[in-house]
Length: 66
Length: 262
Image (cartoon, rainbow over all chains, first blue to last red):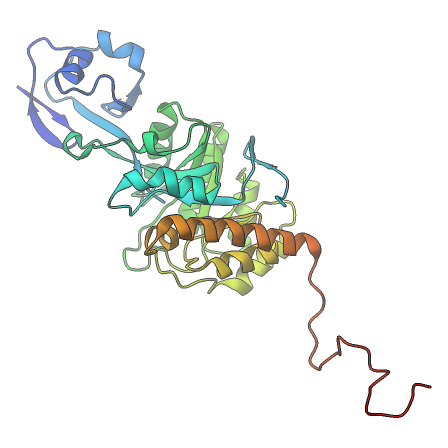
């Protein structure tokens, strides 16, 4: 069972929430924006979202740019 | 003397220099660059997170209270630009977006038609839209009609440091769109070129590579701050007419070696 994180196949955590996954990656307190299957999900939704096989997750942030 | 604060995109800015944050090998210099530039509007990009590559986050390198202008770099179509803009706004750092739609890899020229489409959509969604554009009058008019807060014509290809190669086209935009802020973006490589754009009546300039690629970016940021200020003052002062022949600055009477004044 896998899902896709930023274009990479990634093992799906068992019965994991989005918040749980991000916490395990050390990203929960970072300045990130989440898009799940094409829809932006607000921070206050992360606790209640269960990750599913085949989900496409994008984790983006600001970087230096012109 | 500082020229007065101005308003654009619903924000009050004290500086007419917008500074980019890209191309710094060591981002820890950015606070000093920003301070020297005396800017309160800075651009950033939106990218997939790279946890391994995060030393200091870009937002920690930008002065508190600065207005953030995220760009849609990486977008090749209007649809992609809209997606990136929505992600940028979801970060909660304001509603400004610099629309960049680029499908050409060699010259990184903006696709005006897609840029207009993205601007229409994003303005409808309440963004303050700052489209990076090729300086074409019809495209600029369409961007204004679409609800752009300003237009950002290129002076030369991004990162080329070649100056105001499109000067005559920018002059036409300035003349024909007197109610639209024109911010010259891309290509400005020297403070003198920024000053020239401001003297022509540009509302502001956006500079990244020219500062980032200088031997001393902090000093160059200060040079750009002064140049933008000088150019703005010169625009407000109104330059005198150019003439083909000399017009003496000193009196043409009372010369020592000639007959007495009549």
